[in-house]
Image (cartoon, rainbow, N blue to C red; front, side, top):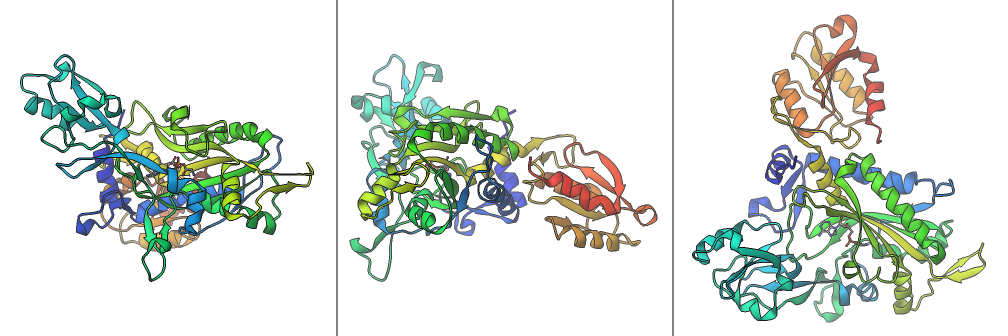
Length: 501
Ligand code: GAP
């Protein structure tokens, strides 16, 4: 069943996962803040990725552990780095402006409804996936015509001469949309006290380039040998023309990227290896395989750096707003030697690698699994949201226990008769290893309901029998079933169940 995004967004706000940025000033389009639970969920995904990539990388096809090191590079780099990488010249999206409403749209995100037989009828533009306002207009502006008389097509496929008949998504008269223009997505700023063309700098639109800029530093200072990887997690910024779908497409977001450097002859083998590994990783942190798909990019979608290689495979997730289709979660690209070569050319610093075993110098090829951490948070939230009218909360979040922001609630049944003391002692023991909450207020049903809504997998309740038989009740979030276990076994019970899959 497809969940309602409005309901999910409301829960995330109500329980402190995600808030609109600058909310008290009416927000700022394309920016979001993570609340106390959201930041825990995000950090859990981040830490699981870092563990998978850097602390305990997988075994390679020959059974040996892979070698991957981490870096944390500057968000602002020398602007020449972005000229070399192709972002100054080529990191563009086509956009159209509306002269009437002053709104700006991604050209490739606009669709139109066109009358099947009347060439004079207005064409109604709307944002892909959001046809409701355009359908309303058919009733208002296209007098006597009904929805069924219209066909849908992308605005880019509409013949040029029909553009004057297009009514923009927020306009009331036809012909107010401009011709598409290329719009560079990088945020510009100035470094230092003087604001001039010479002090322009950019906020990074991907974390990857910081890795290429440090390729030589890492080779010279650590003991890595090709094939090896360099990983980085951090913020990226894109001045998206139409940020939308909650945190799916925002202007500030986080990426988890790894550049895998290998010999050109082995690039295909590694590309296949990483595609497989990345798809299964998302399953291990809780996404269902039938909601995931690997999709090759079409030639027209390939980024400038991937055109010469074996292209890009996307790991896609069935988000509620793309269903029954899928939306990109991660790209696994063969970037060839495009970036190292470009930086060598622009910086005049030699970046070729000398391979001791092959006794040759070459420019390594790069396989890049580039995942969205923010999109990962959204995918896990969508996956976890489960309606259950039989529960007091009506909904629970069934996160994988390793990803859940809070692992357990500790509740004295009543706030007297020695129960709070035992609960405090258990809390003091568990908080050393896990994020747990002690809650002594409200009736027990309300406390369970709150934990269901925030996705806490276990609740331990100390009741009248605990002092007598040294046992507690464990309530399981998904089944809502309860069992009794020994008080001194609670720590081990939790340790065992919290491990990632
Ligand atoms: N270094 C390659 C690169 O940046 P990308 O496909 O442009 O490739 C990688 O971005 C991932 O970053 C995407 O798969 C997506 O998960 C995430 N991402 C990209 N743009 C985003 C945005 N505006 N908002 C949230 N996540 C985004």
